[in-house]
Image (cartoon, rainbow, N blue to C red; front, side, top):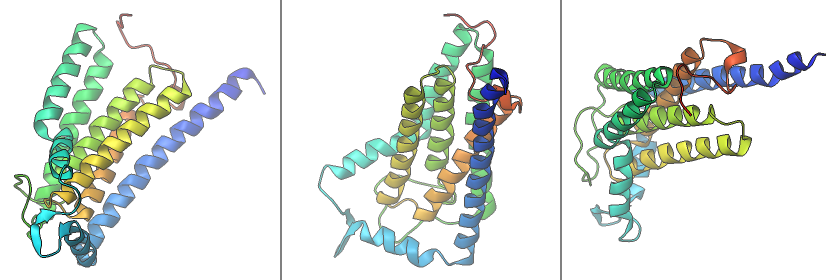
Length: 238
Protein backbone atom coordinates (compact mmCIF):
# COMPACT_ATOMS: atom_id res chain seq x y z
CA UNK A 1 0.00 0.00 0.00
CA UNK A 2 1.38 3.41 -0.95
CA UNK A 3 2.25 6.13 1.54
CA UNK A 4 -0.47 8.33 0.04
CA UNK A 5 -3.11 5.70 0.67
CA UNK A 6 -1.82 5.12 4.18
CA UNK A 7 -2.15 8.82 4.87
CA UNK A 8 -5.75 8.90 3.72
CA UNK A 9 -6.91 6.22 6.13
CA UNK A 10 -6.72 8.28 9.36
CA UNK A 11 -8.18 11.32 7.56
CA UNK A 12 -11.11 9.26 6.33
CA UNK A 13 -11.59 7.78 9.81
CA UNK A 14 -11.69 11.26 11.32
CA UNK A 15 -14.16 12.44 8.70
CA UNK A 16 -16.43 9.48 9.37
CA UNK A 17 -16.08 10.13 13.09
CA UNK A 18 -17.23 13.71 12.61
CA UNK A 19 -20.22 12.64 10.51
CA UNK A 20 -21.07 9.99 13.10
CA UNK A 21 -20.74 12.49 15.95
CA UNK A 22 -23.10 14.93 14.24
CA UNK A 23 -25.65 12.18 13.63
CA UNK A 24 -25.47 10.86 17.19
CA UNK A 25 -25.90 14.34 18.64
CA UNK A 26 -28.93 14.97 16.43
CA UNK A 27 -30.41 11.66 17.51
CA UNK A 28 -29.80 12.53 21.17
CA UNK A 29 -31.50 15.89 20.65
CA UNK A 30 -34.50 14.23 18.98
CA UNK A 31 -34.70 11.57 21.70
CA UNK A 32 -34.53 14.19 24.44
CA UNK A 33 -37.26 16.24 22.79
CA UNK A 34 -39.42 13.13 22.52
CA UNK A 35 -38.96 12.21 26.17
CA UNK A 36 -39.64 15.77 27.31
CA UNK A 37 -42.87 16.18 25.43
CA UNK A 38 -44.14 12.75 26.31
CA UNK A 39 -43.91 13.88 29.94
CA UNK A 40 -41.61 11.01 30.88
CA UNK A 41 -38.76 13.31 31.92
CA UNK A 42 -40.71 15.45 34.38
CA UNK A 43 -40.03 13.36 37.48
CA UNK A 44 -36.30 13.26 36.70
CA UNK A 45 -36.17 17.00 35.94
CA UNK A 46 -37.95 17.95 39.15
CA UNK A 47 -35.86 15.63 41.32
CA UNK A 48 -32.61 17.14 40.05
CA UNK A 49 -33.75 20.72 40.57
CA UNK A 50 -35.07 20.07 44.09
CA UNK A 51 -31.86 18.25 45.06
CA UNK A 52 -29.89 21.36 44.14
CA UNK A 53 -31.74 23.46 46.74
CA UNK A 54 -31.58 23.52 50.51
CA UNK A 55 -34.30 21.51 52.24
CA UNK A 56 -36.78 23.88 53.85
CA UNK A 57 -35.62 26.91 51.84
CA UNK A 58 -35.97 26.51 48.09
CA UNK A 59 -34.50 29.97 47.51
CA UNK A 60 -31.15 28.81 48.92
CA UNK A 61 -28.97 26.71 46.58
CA UNK A 62 -27.16 23.67 47.90
CA UNK A 63 -23.42 23.83 48.43
CA UNK A 64 -20.94 26.30 49.91
CA UNK A 65 -21.59 30.02 49.84
CA UNK A 66 -19.07 30.75 47.09
CA UNK A 67 -20.80 28.41 44.64
CA UNK A 68 -23.71 30.72 43.81
CA UNK A 69 -21.66 33.72 42.65
CA UNK A 70 -19.32 31.29 40.90
CA UNK A 71 -22.26 29.73 39.03
CA UNK A 72 -23.54 33.18 38.04
CA UNK A 73 -20.15 34.09 36.61
CA UNK A 74 -19.83 30.80 34.77
CA UNK A 75 -23.31 30.94 33.25
CA UNK A 76 -22.36 34.24 31.63
CA UNK A 77 -19.86 32.33 29.46
CA UNK A 78 -22.83 31.04 27.47
CA UNK A 79 -24.76 34.31 27.47
CA UNK A 80 -25.37 36.73 24.63
CA UNK A 81 -23.14 39.58 25.92
CA UNK A 82 -20.00 37.48 26.39
CA UNK A 83 -20.40 35.49 23.18
CA UNK A 84 -21.30 38.59 21.16
CA UNK A 85 -18.17 40.41 22.32
CA UNK A 86 -16.04 37.32 21.68
CA UNK A 87 -17.55 36.91 18.20
CA UNK A 88 -16.93 40.55 17.31
CA UNK A 89 -13.32 40.42 18.51
CA UNK A 90 -12.61 37.20 16.60
CA UNK A 91 -14.41 38.41 13.50
CA UNK A 92 -12.30 41.56 13.52
CA UNK A 93 -9.14 39.47 13.88
CA UNK A 94 -10.08 37.30 10.90
CA UNK A 95 -10.92 40.37 8.80
CA UNK A 96 -7.59 42.05 9.60
CA UNK A 97 -5.75 38.85 8.67
CA UNK A 98 -8.01 38.30 5.63
CA UNK A 99 -8.88 34.82 6.81
CA UNK A 100 -12.24 34.81 5.07
CA UNK A 101 -12.88 31.11 5.49
CA UNK A 102 -12.56 31.30 9.27
CA UNK A 103 -14.63 34.49 9.28
CA UNK A 104 -17.44 32.77 7.38
CA UNK A 105 -17.32 29.67 9.60
CA UNK A 106 -17.59 31.83 12.71
CA UNK A 107 -20.57 33.81 11.43
CA UNK A 108 -22.44 30.74 10.24
CA UNK A 109 -21.82 28.93 13.53
CA UNK A 110 -22.94 31.88 15.68
CA UNK A 111 -25.87 33.20 13.67
CA UNK A 112 -27.12 29.77 12.66
CA UNK A 113 -27.26 28.35 16.18
CA UNK A 114 -28.98 31.49 17.45
CA UNK A 115 -31.73 31.38 14.84
CA UNK A 116 -32.25 27.64 15.15
CA UNK A 117 -32.27 27.59 18.95
CA UNK A 118 -34.81 30.42 19.05
CA UNK A 119 -36.88 28.64 16.44
CA UNK A 120 -36.89 25.44 18.48
CA UNK A 121 -37.90 27.37 21.59
CA UNK A 122 -40.92 28.74 19.79
CA UNK A 123 -41.74 25.40 18.20
CA UNK A 124 -41.62 23.39 21.42
CA UNK A 125 -42.96 26.16 23.68
CA UNK A 126 -41.87 24.56 26.95
CA UNK A 127 -42.24 26.96 29.90
CA UNK A 128 -39.27 27.49 32.18
CA UNK A 129 -39.31 25.61 35.49
CA UNK A 130 -41.24 27.38 38.23
CA UNK A 131 -40.41 24.84 40.93
CA UNK A 132 -37.86 27.02 42.69
CA UNK A 133 -36.93 30.72 42.63
CA UNK A 134 -34.69 31.65 39.71
CA UNK A 135 -31.27 32.82 40.88
CA UNK A 136 -30.56 34.81 37.71
CA UNK A 137 -32.95 36.67 35.40
CA UNK A 138 -34.40 34.48 32.67
CA UNK A 139 -37.18 34.87 30.15
CA UNK A 140 -38.65 33.05 27.17
CA UNK A 141 -39.24 29.38 26.64
CA UNK A 142 -37.08 26.65 28.10
CA UNK A 143 -36.32 23.92 25.55
CA UNK A 144 -33.61 23.79 24.40
CA UNK A 145 -31.39 25.83 26.70
CA UNK A 146 -30.05 28.74 24.67
CA UNK A 147 -26.96 29.14 26.84
CA UNK A 148 -26.12 25.45 26.46
CA UNK A 149 -26.72 25.49 22.71
CA UNK A 150 -24.54 28.56 22.23
CA UNK A 151 -21.74 27.29 24.45
CA UNK A 152 -21.55 23.93 22.69
CA UNK A 153 -21.86 25.31 19.16
CA UNK A 154 -19.46 28.23 19.50
CA UNK A 155 -16.79 26.77 21.77
CA UNK A 156 -16.61 23.55 19.75
CA UNK A 157 -16.40 25.53 16.51
CA UNK A 158 -13.54 27.58 17.96
CA UNK A 159 -11.84 24.39 19.11
CA UNK A 160 -12.09 22.98 15.59
CA UNK A 161 -10.56 26.17 14.17
CA UNK A 162 -7.65 26.02 16.59
CA UNK A 163 -7.16 22.28 16.11
CA UNK A 164 -7.03 22.71 12.34
CA UNK A 165 -3.98 24.94 12.76
CA UNK A 166 -1.79 22.39 14.51
CA UNK A 167 -0.60 18.87 13.85
CA UNK A 168 0.12 18.18 17.53
CA UNK A 169 -2.34 15.58 18.78
CA UNK A 170 -1.98 16.71 22.39
CA UNK A 171 -2.81 20.32 21.47
CA UNK A 172 -5.86 19.22 19.51
CA UNK A 173 -7.09 17.08 22.37
CA UNK A 174 -6.53 19.91 24.82
CA UNK A 175 -8.62 22.49 22.95
CA UNK A 176 -11.50 20.05 22.52
CA UNK A 177 -11.42 19.03 26.18
CA UNK A 178 -11.52 22.70 27.19
CA UNK A 179 -14.42 23.39 24.80
CA UNK A 180 -16.42 20.43 26.08
CA UNK A 181 -15.77 21.35 29.70
CA UNK A 182 -16.86 24.95 29.13
CA UNK A 183 -20.10 23.81 27.49
CA UNK A 184 -20.84 21.32 30.27
CA UNK A 185 -20.13 23.89 32.99
CA UNK A 186 -22.41 26.45 31.37
CA UNK A 187 -25.15 23.85 31.05
CA UNK A 188 -24.79 22.70 34.65
CA UNK A 189 -24.95 26.29 35.88
CA UNK A 190 -28.34 26.79 34.19
CA UNK A 191 -29.83 23.91 36.15
CA UNK A 192 -28.14 24.97 39.40
CA UNK A 193 -29.57 28.46 39.04
CA UNK A 194 -33.05 27.03 38.54
CA UNK A 195 -33.72 28.54 35.11
CA UNK A 196 -33.64 25.30 33.10
CA UNK A 197 -34.58 21.67 33.47
CA UNK A 198 -31.73 19.15 33.03
CA UNK A 199 -33.35 17.91 29.82
CA UNK A 200 -33.32 21.48 28.45
CA UNK A 201 -29.56 21.46 28.92
CA UNK A 202 -29.12 18.00 27.40
CA UNK A 203 -31.13 19.11 24.39
CA UNK A 204 -29.14 22.32 24.06
CA UNK A 205 -25.74 20.68 24.38
CA UNK A 206 -26.57 17.92 21.92
CA UNK A 207 -27.98 20.29 19.31
CA UNK A 208 -25.14 22.78 19.75
CA UNK A 209 -22.54 20.05 19.29
CA UNK A 210 -24.37 18.74 16.23
CA UNK A 211 -24.49 22.22 14.72
CA UNK A 212 -20.76 22.76 15.29
CA UNK A 213 -20.04 19.47 13.52
CA UNK A 214 -22.39 20.30 10.64
CA UNK A 215 -20.81 23.71 10.13
CA UNK A 216 -17.32 22.22 10.12
CA UNK A 217 -18.37 19.47 7.71
CA UNK A 218 -19.76 22.09 5.33
CA UNK A 219 -16.67 24.25 5.73
CA UNK A 220 -14.41 21.39 4.68
CA UNK A 221 -16.46 21.07 1.48
CA UNK A 222 -17.41 17.48 2.26
CA UNK A 223 -13.96 16.18 1.27
CA UNK A 224 -12.68 13.39 3.58
CA UNK A 225 -9.10 14.26 2.65
CA UNK A 226 -9.62 17.82 3.91
CA UNK A 227 -10.78 16.92 7.41
CA UNK A 228 -8.24 17.73 10.07
CA UNK A 229 -5.49 18.25 7.53
CA UNK A 230 -3.59 21.45 8.14
CA UNK A 231 -5.46 23.90 5.86
CA UNK A 232 -4.09 26.77 3.86
CA UNK A 233 -6.59 29.59 4.21
CA UNK A 234 -6.64 32.18 1.49
CA UNK A 235 -4.45 35.22 2.03
CA UNK A 236 -3.38 33.91 5.43
CA UNK A 237 -0.62 35.93 7.04
CA UNK A 238 1.98 34.47 9.43
